[in-house]
Every structure is written in structure tokens, then in C-alpha cells.
Amino acid sequence: MDRRELLGLGVSIGAFAATARVVASEAQSVTAAGPYSRCFEQLDQYVAQYLRDMNAPGLTLSLADANGVQRVCAYGVEDLGRRTLLSAEKLFHIGSISKSFLALCLLQLRDEGRFDPHRPINAYLPWLRFDGFDRPITAHDLMTHSAALPDGPLYPADPAFRHRATAAPGSFFHYCNMGWSALGTLVEQIDGQPLAAVLRTRIFTPLGMAETEGALSLDLAERMAMSYQPICSDRPYPRHGALVQSALIALTQAAGCIASTARDMGRYLQLLINRGELRRDEHAGQRLVSQEGFALFTHPHIAADEFGPGSAYGYALAVDQLDGHTRLKHTGGMVSFASALQVDLDAGVGAFASINAMQGYRPTPVTEYALRLMRACREGAALPPLPAAMPAIKIAGATDYAGIYTGSGGRQLKIIAEGDRLYLEHRNARVPLESAIDPDYAFVVQHEDYAHYALLFTRGGADGKGPVTEASWGEDWYAAPAYQGPREFTAPAEWSGYTGHYRNEDPWIGSVRVVSRRGKLWVNGVTPLEPAAENRFYLRDEPASPEWLSFSDFANGRARLLHFSGNVLQRV
Image (cartoon, rainbow, N blue to C red):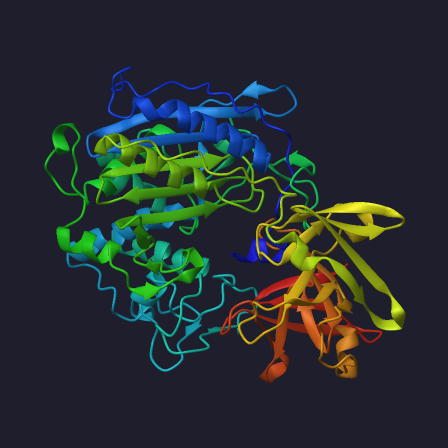
């Protein structure tokens, strides 16, 4: 998860019920007897179900194969107040999928002999404030998210501040937008023009992506789809919580700077399906990037389970297997958009989907099901059945969590299971729980008294898959009857000055709530902190995460500033 999701506990939610109605046109090449037409009705049914389950406003979708864009359509609404239907011609932020466009530019520069991914990045950009662990950090390390750097600001406000890697490059995968922002600056330096111009010249124009923009600006207001975000950004949200229209943003950093339409993204899918070969007009038969470059682009350089079990990471695309076929995939999360891209290289089909809201998830299930449907059409096989519905209040193994949990002073937490539903007994009423998007052991309590944190459950056993033994909410901790560990915990006295709510109004940062529980400090009640040297605390949502917190500027015994991997938040 990226930093903004972590700070908001996966900002899992908030929306207005969407009417999932197909409203956009097909690509010109599609006819009623097209190669995939028999799956369209079933795909539309699934998208309608998905939007209802996730309570999303609207979604655009593009399908493509080696011959071109096969379908473009839109579902749901753009304006939640007026119920204006969404148009597939609107621009959507594609988020981190932008990185793959930059990777292709870098590989073009490699083909031209102007860029070496294994050369130290500071040899190109000596002003970068990156310190390697046991050797200089290379562009390859940044392109594969394997530099062991925290995801902080590329240009820290403190002129003496430097980002330090915490392990040898290649030791582990840790998603780092900052590294790709640096790579965008590198491309500008080598090519001698702004990144948006580089992207247009090298990628958009050859592919015929005439509507796509390589920089987000307020000048795009009339072309941009209206988009939404949760009304409060300091807490987890129930999936049916309130959304507010998001303000336009300006962004030129390469980590997520592209806005595109579904049709243009279909043209990008075609390029990936054809493994870097162009099939359009005067460019037909030419290559956007060499065969060797495309092989590097899609090579599984490092294990990346963050993208799913068995996934690896190439250069800005994840690589795995879907039903025995090689699949390329990536997602994009922005302040108020969520996107997903998938390509089945063996079947030669691809799908892109984007939602005009950020609700803590990506439309990955839509693109995955689209791949399976298109492949069935190509093979003349039976269409795969609709995936199961995913209502928020349906909880797998609900009975595992039921019972009475006891906290300090005899306080109790009573959890009731009824079928696949869970409830918290509170103030003589049953309050529904719903599954958070991430992590899967977190639940949103649909009551204002429990608004600021998720309710977490912990399982016993060496593999963490045993019976549920603990529950926690914020600083509160409760033990189940099966719990057999200690019940008294101590923490250093000075930690009491660290706890509290800190905030930065940058929409990418938001809030951090620090609580003390079970002798540890926790971020937002979810992520444990591990004390380290120099008064730093490392986040342990990942075993070796380089993300860190520190505290400064004490007044009346309480820290007034929290430093999050180089970003500064103030106590509120």
C-alpha cells in the first residue's frame, strides 16, 4: 500500500450508490459479430454487480487485442448530485500505471546508448539526496522498487536531510514513488525537454494517444471526469460512507502524472500485447522499443508479493501467471481515481478499467474477469461464471471472531456472528462490522463511537492461522478466552509524549494517529512501530520496511511534530 493509504488505513471506502448502466460507445471496429461480442452482456452484468458491491460512482473500461481496441464503454455516473452519466471520452488519472510509460522512455534511451540502468543514479543526478547501503543506488534499483529507500519527498525541506537505504539493493521489494519521481527528472535531463513533452514525442504520438496528457494541470478541468474522495481523511470509512467531490490537482512527477481516456489506454494495451511492436498507420511494423528492451521491461526482476502471491516485478509492471498464462499487470491509485491494467501475453488480450473515486481499492477484479471472458471467446470455450458478489458486510469465517473479549478493568467486547455477518454489541444494540479492504483482519465498525480506528483481530499459532486470541481498537486491547500470553505490558514513559493525532493537509499525506498498545506504539492502531537508533521508529507492516517515524519540538512534554520518512506533520 502507498503512504496515503497507510495513513488513512486503506481509506477503504465512502461512496454513493451507483447505477451501473452502460452508457458509452463501442470502438469503431467492433460489430455485433465481433470476436468478443458474446461476452459483453455477461461482462456488463459483472461490472454492474461490482459497482453496487463497492458502491463506486462510475467506471470506464477498454478491451484490446493485437489488432486494436475492441471495446470502450462507461458505466455509472460522473456527477453524483445530478446523476449525470459518465462518458468514456473523459480523462481519468491513471496513477502509477504512468510509471510503465516512463520505463519505456528509459528503455528507448537505453536502446539509443544514452542510458544504462545499472549505472549509479547519482552519476546522472549528483544532487539527489540518496545514500545507498553497501553500494551506490542504480536506476535499476529504483525501477524495480528494490533500493530499500523510504517513500519520502524527493526534495526535502531540510537542506541537510538525506534519504538512507536500510538494506542492500535487491534485498526486498518496497514500493517507492520517490524513486520514480527521480527517474522522471533523469529522463528530462537526458532528453532535454519537460517530461510531458518526452512522453508525447516518444509514446503518445506513435501510439495515436492524442487525448492523453503527460502532466496533470488545472487547465484540464473541462476534459477531466468529476471525481470523489471520502469526506473525512483521518479514519477508516464504511463502504457506504459519504464522498465529497475532489478538487483538481496539478502534478508533474513521473510516479503518477498521466491522464488518459479509456480508448487511448486501449491503444497502450495493444502495444503491450504486441510486445513493443507498433501496428498503426505509418509506424506499422516498427518497434517502440527493441525486443531486448521489452524483455527487460517484462522480466521478473524481483519477487513482489504485494501484487499477489507468486508475483514479481519488471520495470514498472508486475508479472505473474493467470490460469497458466503469463500476465502483465499494474494498478494506479490517485487522490480521487483508481485504475487497473492487465494483459494476458499468451492469449493476446488486455483490459484497462478506472473508477472516478478513491475508495481504498482498485478495479482489479473487473480487468481480471475481462481477460478470462476474452480468452474464452478466442478459444471458443464456455464463458466463465460471474464472480461471487462482495458485499462489505459479508465476512468469511464470521464465527471465528465471535465471543467475549476482556480488556483492562474488566471491560468487555462482545462480538456476535449470524451466518456470514458480524456485529459488535454496543449500547444495547448490534452494530454491523464490515471487512476493510486491507488488511483482511481489520473491520470497520459502523458506529460513530468507533469511527477513528479499525477493529483488529489477532490469531494464535506459529503461522498466525490459529484461533482468534485478541482484539484491539486504537489503544484498547482485549483478550479472548483462548489467549494464554501476558496481560500486563509496559512502555517507556517518554512514549506518552508521542501519542496523539498528527496531520499534514497535503492530500497524499493526511493524518497519522499514534497510539500505545501492548507495550508498543502503533500507527493508526494498525501498524506496529519498532524502536531504532537516532530516535526513529520503523513501520512493521512489512518485515523490513524502510519507512520510519520520529518526533520533535516538544512542548509541555508532548511532541508537536511528527516526521514520516521526511514529511512533517503537526499535532492537532
